[in-house]
Length: 270
Image (cartoon, rainbow, N blue to C red):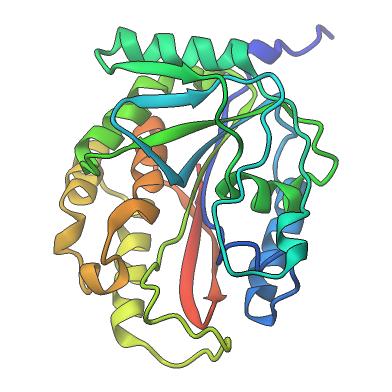
């Protein structure tokens, strides 16, 4: 039997809620469901040759990719114990893939460039430390756009569709609920009908039997979702989902629906 042609292996796409700063690594009880999910997620995936993360914690005027061969960690949080700043995740970068992705974006009339100095922020190193603690998979990040335009982020994903034939894992690292004032930092899972309404709508739109064009239209108009601005006073933690949805060509499946920091949040897989 001939060996499988790995060039034809479909990419895997995941959007998930990455929790509050370094708290998942520090043993915070309100992240227990999320930590368990992320530790077991690789068993549901093929091991990728490379990982591309679209993190909620990086915005640029122009789509920008990490270009360093060995990116440092960027501790983009404050006020935590010393151990939060001693975390290591020495995954190699992937300048060659970053250059190819920049080329795909430019071919689709999306300006792009590489940043050879920027390190991995916690939208990458916290979940990947849980998922792939060996840090042996080349990884890179793609920024959001400072415009926060949902249509532009769907277009980013569409420009990456050519990568679907490669054995890569694309991660939209955000949070499907991100109202800092509404989180329970004590981890109390209180009923929240407004949050439930938004999460239910996300599930319906991302996984339901509707056309791709209709799905994109609804996500561009996400502010019309029930309780949208309550769940996302600012949308940077939702927009990685738009990139994932733009890259995919089919409905997602829901792979996480539980509580983080006392609020229900979800994750999707394509």
